[in-house]
Length: 483
Image (cartoon, rainbow, N blue to C red; front, side):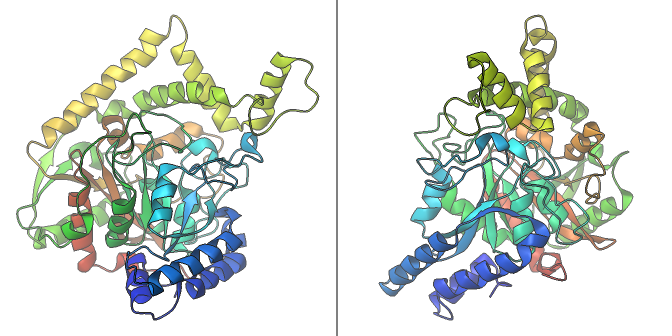
């Protein structure tokens, strides 16, 4: 059962090949046996999951036919879940149990999904390796001496290891797409505003966006269809009809115009990854697509712009964690100021402190115009590059990451080298466009991902291209040994 995709599970449940309760128990047993090797879960909600599964079976027996009814998933541990620990991978949220569900959680609960637990992540989603979590690093199931990518590394590792068929993640600068690439999954970051951020604990509010990680484009279409849509509780949510993502999958690719940015294939890209990317291009050409060379000239400024804007927003968002209202509180504070200082000093990890300090500096008097305002201007130029490109092409294709998954601890002494791993993914967040990563092969036994970028609200097009490629390839079917 654990080898089935989300869509296959939906069909099997509909055909009564097994019950949701049987499937859920099977996966809970696998989590108990195998997750100690990976550390992908922070909290396993076994009792709740079995109750939800039994309830789903009752609903199916009564005639309900929702595709996700009884399907097991898990949530990245920054989606608030009523009565269940929501930690953001941080000590400072020790013991915090949200009094409500995030909109994404609420929608999936309404669809009848079974929640197996909360997944490990880089602390407050700040990282590209899932090594900054207070609960310890997550291991890549393809090679447990290597990182799975971040910050949705727990989600990626759990799905790749077949502990569950799909999971939620969030993407602020590539945190769905990068771990998807490093663990052989399909992951999509929707257009900014497509999925509600209400109840999703913020890192950088103008960049964060929730989305699914799964093994196939079909599974991502199933999940995205359930969580997308306008939410009046989220002021950044866009009131626009949700496309039928499943219906979009079957569209032929004849006439599809693919743009290849020259900036994606220069220095810094592992040549072996470049070869895998071009093999995908050739496969898509055989399916009827045409290819055009394009340029995204301001991409070179994306990393510095992002690492001003995101920390600036983080320094503001994380000011609410003060030891007063919820989470961790230092012992025996001398006064209120001591309570604030020591609770934050003891509660936040090194990477979070680094970004708070950078952001506070960038927003401070005398530096706001020099750094933050300039970064926002660069952001607009990056958006303009995409607007111009999409007048000539339908999708933009390139590598998801410049390198393969690296060894645990390899980049800890040099944060900037880890930041550079997001060079191809960050621009989509700065511009607010959708992006998808899909499996494209292996180098030295490690997965390679190809990224597709689309115009605003063109998630269906990206899922369509990925699905059509997955009909003529089997990379997405490969599983790590030992799991």
